[in-house]
Image (cartoon, rainbow, N blue to C red; front, side, top):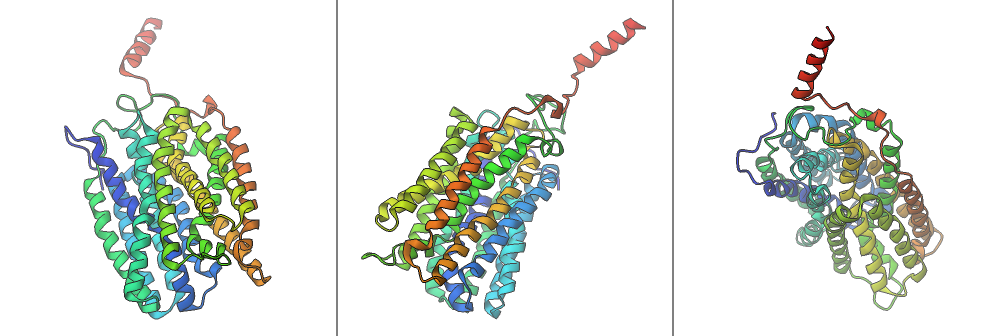
Length: 446
């Protein structure tokens, strides 16, 4: 499938809505915690078990983005969005079958494995195209699109909760909710498939004006640089710290304040998930746009340093202040979203636009790792603390301090980032004038 080229007069501002239609759909992943309690009740699962589809989905996101990044660069955004649509919607349909037959492995296979491939390909599908449409404001451009991934749960969380209330929270009700999700997202993602275009000036690598403006590094060359692996650690630590809260958001706030005079209801917990999604979404556009002004390294200093401070406040305050808990969680999730939206621009600054989409895909293996680490740390420690007879905020205190340590590691890795050594750069092709001059020089020498 050839990438659709924009006709004359095409507005570049039509591309972010195309990307948003895909990212708002696949961003449903952040509302998974709404399905955790019903699944645990209907199928007799533990908190760790019910997190498995989400964890596998994030693992497959990173792996499919890494291995599919070059294909996305080669075949263009429409091909990638089509693949994402098929996989993501099929994942929900398989999950619906699994819930209806009470075969949990089908939910893991559908939502986690098949749907996770759709997450990865869909996530990176517009990034390279957006950077090429907006070379003057790459942080803002990628922030607009990736904002949708963070904001997907803002729609999906209350929508899913309402469906479970209407259809029932037993296995048949969950199955029907999954079915409606799969069909609805297929239609919505189709809008992005039909709308997306690539710039008319885009040509094969080495051709056209601006193709080699500044240092350029290939995807294969990038993974051989220390800068790539420093950013891998930065992203992994930042994501681990945020995703642990996000995956368990609804039950976490319920547990945290269970022993207070004002416990959190199920509907209020779903509202908390929606609030986190709003912070995640706002951070993606707000903080990534700020990075265009103050620089990528400086904004990551904020994400990692202030994020650690927020976790410290939650751990020390415990269940004494619900507003403080909510405020700190919102700030952490805004940094979590901002980190995702800023990383493509950080990569563009270091490695150029040559194969930035493929480089971004490889870097998202950090997300795969974090998708396992974050939920595993929070769920496993909470399960062990519960077995020890603890409850309330004490279930999560140790997890908070672990997250502070991880953010400190990320902070150090960010400080180690330096410009890429010129030996890793792809040589710029000679212009026609340069070629004519070289031929003339050779003729004179003869």
